[in-house]
Amino acid sequence: MSEPVIEIEQHWDIHYRHAAGETGSHFFRALREKRLLGRRCPECRRVLLPPRGFCDRCFVPTAEWVEAAPDGVLEAFTIVAQKFTGMPDPPYVVAYARLRNADTAMVNYLRGVDLGDVRAAAERLAVGMPIRVVFSDRPRLLVRAGAVSDGSTEVRLERDGRVATITLDRPADQNRLTRDVLLILQGFVDHLAQDEEVQAVVVTGAGPQFFSMGILNPAVRASYTKEQILELVRIANRLYDSIEALPQIVVAALSGAARAGAAELALACDIRLAAAHATFALPEALWGGFPGAGGPVRLPGLVGRARALELICTGRELDAAEMERLGLVLAVYPADRLLPEAHALAARIGESGPLATRGAKRIIAARTLPGFTAARALSDALRHALEWSRDVDEGMAAHREGRTPRFTGR
Image (cartoon, rainbow, N blue to C red; front, side):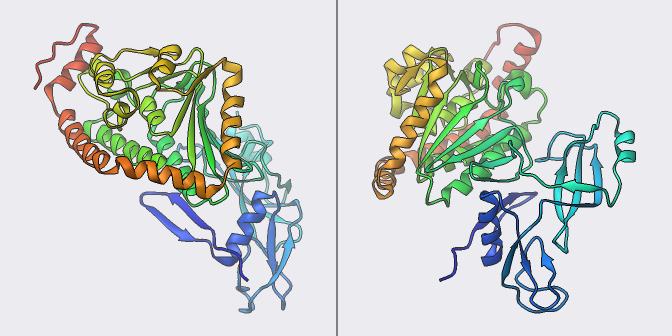
């Protein structure tokens, strides 16, 4: 019986899905076990890496799997100095490495070269120099039993048995949800939606201050056009709807302040836990707007209609104790206990029957779906119109000029 096929998703200018095939699926499973496998041609005896089902020289099927040696030679390299969406911050080196017992080369990131002086680094590197391939201890898309790269060190996906953890790891920028981060998260969520083994997902932020400052604030808004802002809102809504629709139980571990779009990310999760110093706020009304990524849709179901209106219309910040009292979070823990407690809860969920946990989530979602769909459609329409209102422009101008805004409702 053949192994099930793995699907791979990537983000370029378009979002598409393709099947890895039987050979590719086996290759990626081995990567998760930190094993690099190639296929040997039965005629020319070459080891093809990455593996192919047919030899491109002999035109015959391959079948024998061979583990690649960890050492080899550098065949080509590029020192990248320009920033590209979804790629590491420059400078970095992309290298073609041919391993000792393989006949074809693979693309790798090259480490161990000082890129402070790019010209000196280029002179030091040479085609044919010996290299060694290793699995990164902190890969860009981390699966606890192996690694696949998605091109970013700012978001991590870790897997431990039936529990996956997504970490926003941008503490220097308050774990801000940039366009790139939102798209990477979408790729993670799409991957998890097809994962039948993972039964619970924990979402958290790195560092003690912020779960995340969100997507936009007045200072950040000033660097975007209105069209770009609306695109960010659309991307965020698609992501948050996808998180809510995951078959797994999703636990948000609020490690610090959750503001604006990050508060809406937390609302899209099934369960929320908070550190004792964590806060929650939807401050958009203070800027002349309203939360456009699901806040008015999801918050009333958690804290009631009146309280949701009060929080959204005043932009008032909640501390952890009030979040727990209102039922916005399930429990509050000391900061050093938050993540262990979140993982412990996720592990207990993972020990339950998948048909039970996934079925219960589907039933609860079905109960609220008709009203949710209509509310989301209205939110999208009103948020689009709001972006072109005078009040939004007034809110930004007031922030820029350091004065109180004068909203007119137009």
